[in-house]
Image 1 (cartoon, rainbow, N blue to C red):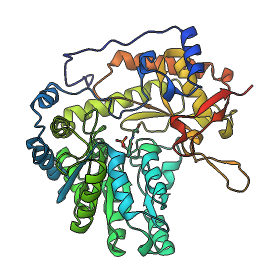
Image 2 (image 1 turned 60 degrees about the vertical axis):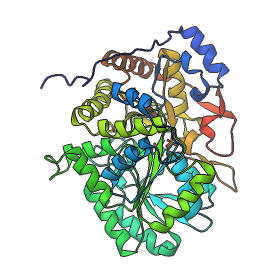
Image 3 (image 1 turned 90 degrees about the vertical axis):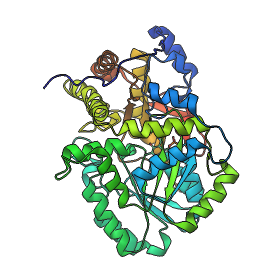
Amino acid sequence: MKTIIEPFKIKSVEPIRFTTKEERVKILENAGYNPFLIHADEVLIDLLTDSGTSAMSAKQWAGIMDGDESYAGSRSFYRFESVVKDITGDKFIIPTHQGRAAEKILFSIIGGQGKFIPNNTHFDTTRANIEFSGAEAVDLICEVGKHPEQRADFKGNMDVEKLEIFIKETGAENIPVVMITITNNSGGGQPVSMQNIKDVKEVCKKYNLPLFIDACRFAENAYFIKKREKGYENKSIKEICQEIFSYADGATMSAKKDGLVNIGGFLSLNDDELAIKCRNLLIVTEGFPTYGGLAGRDLEAVAQGLEEVMEESYLQYRIRSTEYLGDKITAANVPIIEPPGGHAIYIDAKRFLPNVPPNQYPGQSIACELYIEGGIRGVEIGSVMFGKYDKKTGALISPSMELVRLAIPRRVYTQSHIDYVAEVIIEVYKNRDKLKGYEITYEAPMLRHFTAKFKPVN
Ligand code: F0G
């Protein structure tokens, strides 16, 4: 087998800025030890997110020029709508400025006090939007999905048995929707199998519940299905995507991931009554239904991006480049969620820093050190992002995993960038005994990871 190469060549480049280790120590201190608060031009390799960071293609940029900026009935909207409809098969396509705007609209209407919304694992904005509406977000990931060191093909699967028990105990009338996130971002970018989606759909049917897909990385998930699930080897990525969405009654989408754009999203729906309510709210919060929160040019770029993302040569390169980083660092014994996910490598901070307890944020500690050592920015996904305080004792309640996510922007970095990232991670791992825990000195009441400040524990 020959090296899998980028299925594109580079037409436009952007410089990155080099800093010294001494400079980075200062920069991090000034940022309150929170990588979110570092200026991006002080980051060398930015793996904070794969969201909105894609390099667009020449055809997408051409689409930007060609976009129709009519307030109502824009040609770009109709192209966007037809591309999305072709994939989801849904009747109503509502453009939003990004994924959380679609979530906000959906949960403002179907959420609320006394409601429960299960998912394999809710992403933080999904959870926040559900909780903001007064409803409760419930994670029902399969057992193997909770064990970073165990390898399995579809660790993003929902625990279908638990789902049914949950519905019986909670009462179907209190569950407005069941969701599945593909791939499961908060659980390691792990895919969900077609069989699991079908099984969840069967349970939903039995209790007359709608199923919605959080579709951010639908094409990456489809590629894993093609490679790992029997019966899909010879299907096209598009056919697999269409089958996934055929089991769903709707979807929320951040086009900033598998739309290969810097901004954009949508809500895709089948229910007439719900669509009317969502559109009415869209007009108040985002914009007229044929542009939502976007410019015509953005809709054009999303439409083009959604077509490019389903190209198999692109997905083969994409998934391989993530796996390549995973393989390099696991060869040096760095503990990660196995196997590598679609869009990111997740360092297992519990095994990396066994002596730093969750209430001293081991993931934060590793994220800080990666920046100091090599100017690499990743993000903690653990007790900082998902930690809650016990209402009575004030003690920290930690999630089951402490992770550092290194998300790989689409079509942005080359193999030598990734080689460098691996070298830095391995260097930090070798010096792990010197890493300190952190304590929080400031935090916001919601989504605290974005703005929290820290200091090292002595
Ligand atoms: N759902 C999932 C699974 C996501 O990963 C994200 C965003 C959203 C919803 C919200 O979309 O950002 O367009 O509003 N994830 C980004 C990340 C931010 O870094 O993983 P958005």
